[in-house]
Length: 149
Ligand SMILES: CC(C)(COP(=O)(O)OP(=O)(O)OC[C@H]1O[C@@H](n2cnc3c(N)ncnc32)[C@H](O)[C@@H]1OP(=O)(O)O)[C@@H](O)C(=O)NCCC(=O)NCCS
Image 1 (cartoon, rainbow, N blue to C red):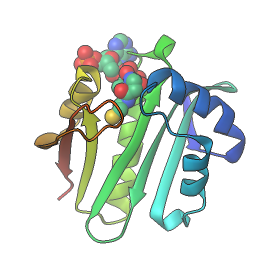
Image 2 (tube, rainbow, N blue to C red):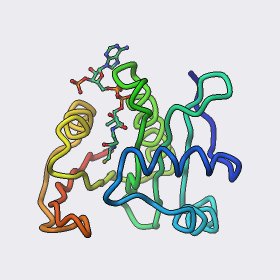
Image 3 (cartoon, rainbow, N blue to C red):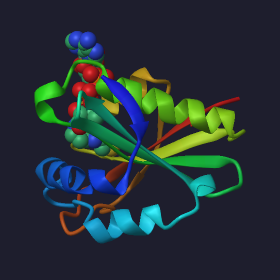
């Protein structure tokens, strides 16, 4: 498995996985296109691939100031539990450190214990709840934070 930066050509595979994993709040191709339109200083999108097969992806937004945000993280279900999610998350956090950010924040669905465990294991703490954050489902988001220094 190796990580590399996301390209436009990855989009069809990513959108398919997005719909499979997040049926209620999947990103559309237009949402990814808007991210690609951002300057690279403001974002980092990575894919994980095995040979030429896409098995996961993740993205981080750098909005300036002190805080970077994990905006998406996904691994194809057939490959869960092999460390791909860990590799993607670690690469994003390292990049935030390299760019001088002080903290990483993210939101995760309250009903997603697997992802919440992954973040806890990587030093994120649960710092708050955003009620009804995910729409249209109305599921709450847990806000998590990792201090980098
Ligand atoms: C959350 C998600 C990204 C995790 O990806 P993953 O590749 O399975 O993550 P990892 O393999 O690094 O770690 C997950 C589990 O596998 C275990 N694991 C890691 N490496 C392993 C290996 N080589 N062999 C066996 N198990 C392993 C970890 O201990 C962890 O177990 P735990 O959560 O019970 O403690 C993935 O489940 C996913 O895409 N879920 C749906 C989308 C989603 O919820 N995204 C997050 C939105 S905020």
